[in-house]
Image 1: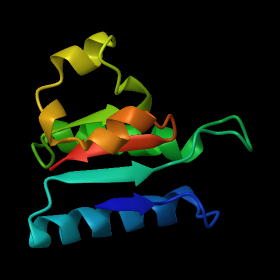
Image 2: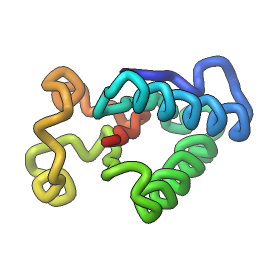
Image 3: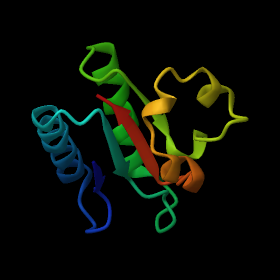
Image 4: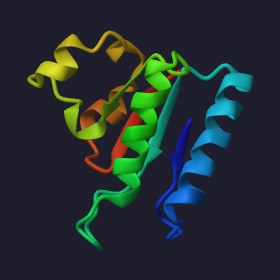
Amino acid sequence: MKIDIHSNKETKEQALYNLQAHIKMCRRTKDKVLYIIVGYGSTSGKHIIRNHVLELALELKEKKQIKDYILGSELDIFNPKYQSFKYKDLISEEEKRIKNPGMVVFIL
């Protein structure tokens, strides 16, 4: 499943709420991968939503509520994080090809 939590100028609170709702929906539908479009800070240069999503990802991973996560910009065969990423086979070939710097991939 792919969601865009930055396009409607959501606040960070709205974006994180929407993300958590989509995580629950993915679990109900047994989706294993959630592609989250967070933007890449081109407007403000601050990456506000992305940074909060990454904080949440780390927290959820520590609590074992998600298996792992990776940035779209890290979806490159030469990237050491991607090379050691256990779940790379679950990520679609299209997303690997695009390498969207404004995306975070959650493995559920």
